[in-house]
Image (cartoon, rainbow, N blue to C red):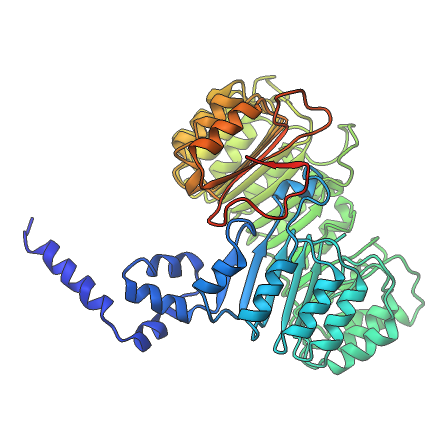
Length: 567
């Protein structure tokens, strides 16, 4: 080795760190990735300061990992904030009501430090009408609001945003319990009636409208009137298809869809039936994303629709399409990259409907570019999963949800260990994994040994002993989120991650064998972690029923409700 090489490298690094601030800030402004910018800030103090002053967007994956005051002090010129609140298991009602994650304290600081804030994107946060009114009054240049799985607000708060934010270009409301330059209008998740005349006037004024997603109260004839006034749409979420059209309305609706030449995303289709699906065909040629999560289509109906979608990259369907429907997808959508199959009725225990391994296999044979899957089914085999990942080895997200807890391979009656062993051995790019079925510690030994790029792991009703969790914590160097419920993992498993948790974003454990004593040891050994325990009425003395662990630079949170004990 040339002994001068290290010195040359050091000199080059020093010269790179001595760029004028203006040059550094210009270079850093070209980096879009949060990870890349964070890495650049570690080069030197000069790069740290340049990154600090040039950053205009910030992503915060846990609202309790840092305080708004610390964020504002670190980044003085932010224009866009993305903020996440409650743990993901709140989607399954596992996080108690009034747990926290209220946006108001953040808005109060932002109003003082970021008066030019333009975008706010929230997920699983509590947002009251008062907070929305505060937002509308304090930020004069506000342009974009996105609320995903948020709670606490009503249409009254949204009305203030629409009325007071004159520069608004995006209002996106998804999965939650205007002006003439709006480019995104999404109220598909709202259950209340819409003043259609007001909506029609709004759409007529929005010459730049690109995204329109209405709720099920909008009828087909109303949809037709909106479409002719929004020819530039790229994303459309329709209303209800439960309407009888006369001989004149049906051709008018078909022509309206035909006028949507730029459409690449289609969703909604509430109560869609075979009778009116043909009106969609003229708009399907350029579709890349078809979301049928609200349309309980049968296999024949899906087959007739996807044959008109040759460019499809993403498809979401209900399991009413059956294996035959997925076989039609395999024949028509060779460029498919993402497939999500949701259960139409997850609480129906009958096994003579839905999808099985044969539909999944068909897609893997016909759609070799598949790299993201979420698949709810009632039966699966080890051999099928092994074949699927052999056909599609580039999976980055593999979420297989066998809905009957502890379900073995229904052909051999063996555990599903080899299925997930095949996944982690074959799919070297795997970043997110959800496991299900009858699983022993062997599954987790495979994960720890082979899943070296895994970032998120979700586990339910699985494992034999503490060894399973220990294997994952020891063996997955990039693990950032670990979600566990109803597993036999106890204190030994929890404490095996002492060296790991500070490099992770969060750990969730519920209905496991962790005790208060184990949680107290973790909190004592790792004071920079917040260890929160939520006790349930059914939990026995000393048992920590729900445990949420996350790294933070803010210390214990100040708004914890009485049922949350921070150790």
